[in-house]
Image 1 (cartoon, rainbow, N blue to C red):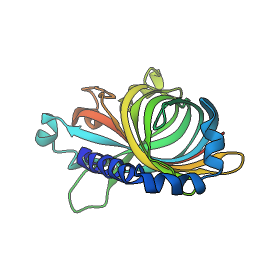
Image 2 (spheres, one colour):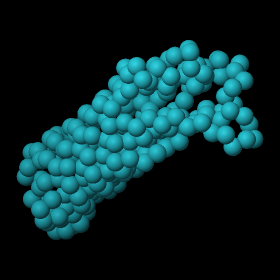
Image 3 (tube, rainbow, N blue to C red):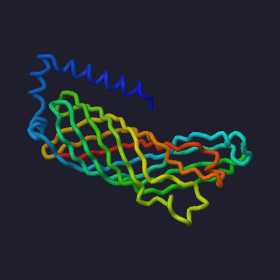
Length: 241
């Protein structure tokens, strides 16, 4: 996802919020938001997130990729997984939240190597992972309308793969991936205020900012790569209150 897309989305949200800030709308909002005002009295609240994630890598090819005659194509595909997180949400004024959402993500990432062009002989390298994740984010919310409000969210995430084989002797002949990763995140969603909880569907994109490839010149699958940057597309369902 391009940064310009998120910038346009935020500008649109700010403009919508500006419209709702007019005096005429303010009176209408106060009459059509019942559950919202109950939750507004809380300076913080907690919750749980259930999510599905689609994980893969953004590849950077090395100079040896052009010179080699063993690998014609090296790429990555997005693979589905599941995530479970806890939520700690602290309000910062009327429109901003600070969010800490630690948890676990179960995912599988693939590297696909094709030996010869025009022939269906794909060599697939699978990386099954259990990530402990520690995301920190700031969320900006619009004014409410009928117990609903839009939001955009952005932040940073550290993740550690507790199932990593990067230090295993049995993995000497495998492409190795660092268990540590840092990512930037951005997304949007909607809060829906019910009597006893807030339900918030959210769509988010995460992009790694550090190279996770542990280079090994003895393996052709590693030698043709210069870097691996993680990328994750997540659809989340937050339950808070």
